[in-house]
Image (cartoon, rainbow over all chains, first blue to last red; front, side, top):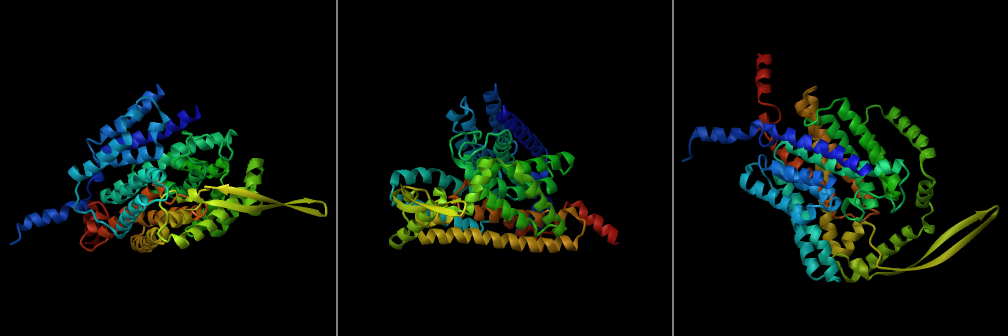
Length: 47
Length: 461
């Protein structure tokens, strides 16, 4: 019974955390990440 | 019903990774800490879920993740060196079969700790890793602490979720890890964005910290008491009102004594009178044997080399009755006793080079966290009240405290390759690489959301 309670509590929170992470864009990239690539692309290929 | 629900949870967790592959990394962390395949015997054991999650985590990173900002740090290299070294020592181990069994989980733990930092490219990923580790350990700690309160404790007799004395389910290990993880619990509650800090988060964190403190009482592991003492001292460093803090701690400690079970206070008193205690005397004898052993085997004897030790030592106990003190001396013969210390575990199994690399890995972590702590303290002072600069130094501080408590617990528990601790080292490496990257002059926008500099610019004009 105690084990079930502990598992239900923490696994409920883990499931909620996983669900919230799915909705967050900043999980995979942050504002600064894309900039070097984008500015490099604007400059065109290096000769 | 319960088995089905837990199996569905694990399968669901892994399935979510299809949308966000980083969740596979989190799924592996969860499976490795909680070992759900040992809790339920219905579906999971036949699926090799740990292996599935490992392959998914690695494959997801390899195929789908952005690797431009991944860096291989010096500490990852040290773990790689340790991995290769342990592999070689296993091939020439004194006990090849037993050594191979330990190697079977050590290489996975080391490899994952080397891999984890490569995936920790964003602040949210670092936070999510810390959160999953906390909630994973909490699963074991909450159930153990409730049983302790209800009177089910005792050395070696507290039934945790899984009763097989492996991983975090061993008494001394969980009581050390439970105390070590407290600073991370506090950080997640204060600076978390997945569960932003509110009264519910604070209540849960406070209850969890209390549960963590109960674990050494429930398992009656003396090392836990040492760890609590160290945690109290370490937290003085960041406490704002130190005098009040010390007073409160002293009051809490005295208030707790009457509530402690008699068996606990009795066992703790053997810390002082360790000569009478067989468990403590064995440790000293094993350590002396290890020092002797490496004189002839400077490169260690491979995993589980302790199995060849034969020990004989004396225990002394004083029985005081009135003015008379009767000292009873007992000769004890013992063999194949484990190291009961991570330092001697490393020395005996991997020799001086193995111990040196392991110590380098640990000490470098303490130093790196100290550097991050002071650097980001300055950043926070330069930007008072700015949440974008508030979380870094406290996390470095928490991870440093966690490691110090682990290193203190390691004096008396053989947990040199404990997977949970290696994950924490992976988290430290990830934080180090991430903060160094965003702190470089080319990358100021990564510290705060992109809108913020524009707002500041308008305000400045």
